[in-house]
Image (cartoon, rainbow, N blue to C red):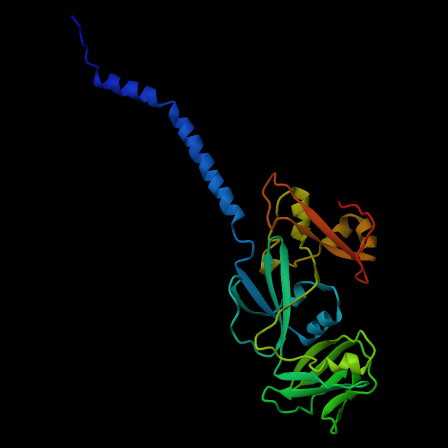
Length: 308
């Protein structure tokens, strides 16, 4: 005779709870691993540029400095007049008035800076085997004869015969400066070969206003903010190292000079910049650094150097 004893409802509940209580931690562990994997994948596929690109207007003197310098050392004084901003992943279609502009955004661990100059006239160079003849036209194709044209510091005279500004027997290197109706533009005069019919015949167009803005990248040395010093000292980012509106607060080399006179002597001979593999770091992250060092003439330093 078999005897069946019914389970008490409370006892049955406790039994089921005991059976399923062990797999629950394993389920949560698998869930967390999957979540971390998705988060890591999102991080790798996340954007590498700053959300916005900023446009600043600079003065004629600042533009001339950039045109005259192979490696430009930029600081906060260049970023004094913010004109506009736009999403980095989109183009800029707004119309800018004549002038000189810097465009800046971050990409990865680097700050990108580009420059454009907008003018309301076009400049052309006539074919000539010995002289430099520059003609200037407005945007309607009319010749401009009342502009001020200089090659370096030499002012060029206007010739009614050729309808151009002429520099006799020119083989100049440097900057052409054109000023008309309060607008000053600069052009690099790169004459690597002696004047001849062969080299000059294929250089009819000296410069022309493009149909759209052409931004020229600038080879520059960033003045690392003082936050960079504390970031390296304490092991994680301090302040706003890569914040566009707050970068260029102070220079790393000036800060280092205060704490170690070695950097004062070193910076009298050399300059350069440091590039990091990430724009921001978390505690225990691996920091990878590359240093680019050049002398005052812009030549890279090739000998072994210590990085502290």
